[in-house]
Amino acid sequence: MAQSYWQSGKSETATFSLFIRSYPPNRGYFVSAGLEDVLDYLQGFSFDRPAIDYLHSTRMFAADFLDSLKGLRFTGEVWAIPEGRLFFKDEPIVELTAPVIEAQIVETFVINQINLQALIATKAARCVHAAAGRAVVDFSLRRTHGIDAGMKVARSSYLAGFSGTSNVAAGQRYGIPIVGTMAHSFVTTFEREIDSFRSFVRSFPDNSTLLIDTYDTVAGARKAVEVAREMAARGQRLRGVRIDSGELASLAKEVRRIFDEAGLRDVKIIGSGGLDEYDLAALAEAGAPYDSYGVGTRMGVSADAPWFDMAYKLVEYNGRPVLKLSTGKVSSPGRKQIFRFADGQRRPLKDVIALRHEELSGAEPLLQKVMEEG
Image 1 (cartoon, rainbow, N blue to C red):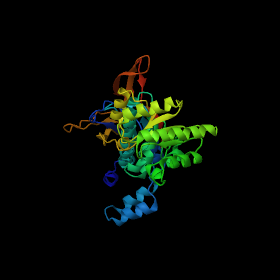
Image 2 (tube, rainbow, N blue to C red):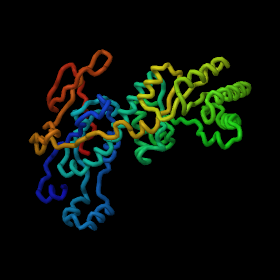
Image 3 (tube, rainbow, N blue to C red):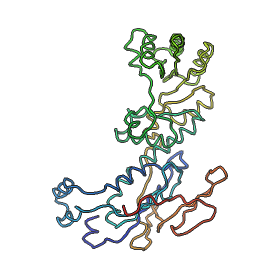
């Protein structure tokens, strides 16, 4: 398209709007995420020599058009909902205004980044809500769809209220608190389970969480009590234990009873093992005494809603509002603003989609200018 725009002499300013057409099953809101990566990309947008050489090698493009790409940069402006804010279907998440070639070429990257990160932030926010005040951490990296996705999952879940991640690289890049326990493989390298516990607490005397379900959770808890008492004699304290399998609600209650009867009420219990918001809500309903949860695969791939019907549509060209009338895919014309009415606790009551120049008293304008002249 860019070549056809260029050959047709179309260089006027265009505004594209990014939005989600419909809710996936069991969703009624979305959480904004991914904007930071989009802005970083736009600031550095260019075609380097290897990219132009490759395009030339495809024999699909005119040489003079490829020459025009050598100095192409993004020079437009961006209005967007800040990361971490709630939004709803049909509302513009991002509106990007630039010469039409610039605005069109960046479409795929913009959708790719915000679709994934808003997807994960929304799923993570649901987990945080379902956990009913317990901390939730990201354990997803091993099963996310690639390393880049795993990094974005760690950031998006933290943005949505997770308290940390097991992804050390994400901790380094984004400043997210890192957390970790032990694996079953560590336990099984020792002939006796208790020896694996003793070895681990020697290595991490100030931050030890023991995985107690490798063989028998209740027996593992009793061994952890023995190790905790040994630590106390050295002036140390066992931080917690993790349960990763079995009937999580009843096991947590039994493990809590064992530690409380041993006078170890400060030892925390962490739950993990294929959890999502539905499991967390069920555990809260059952009164399971977990202090925190590790949530992995189902959050990291948003298993029950793995994609959004996200669209990036032209809404204004050369000062003229435009729209699409395709069945089921109608777009709203013009540059827009979202006005949010909220109650005294800042809980959304209703949103109004208006034109950019309009004003509504008593409402918060959500779209903010986040980039100007590239």
